[in-house]
Image (cartoon, rainbow, N blue to C red; front, side, top):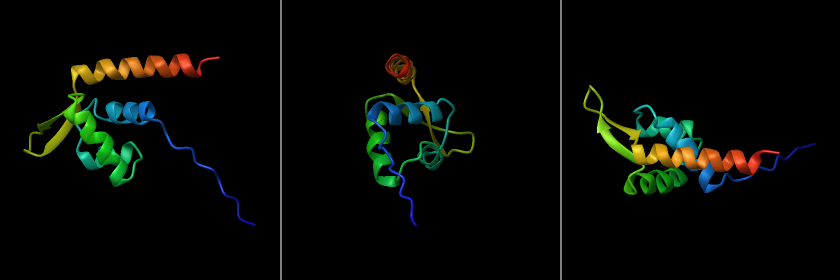
Length: 91
């Protein structure tokens, strides 16, 4: 007998929170993708939208590699989204 588990898709706010939390510390794109648990296509859609809108920024680490970090604007958005999730899911 095979048991099929129904997976719900995460919402835009939940995915955005995941990405912004991971990039609170400068992190490379691959690690952000894996830590936010997204496939390549979905990750790129969300990631580049956040980058383009100034919620995360690209910088270089001490070895000259590209890493990404949440901006002040991104931290503000993260705070708002966390508060909204808390209101929505509180009993």
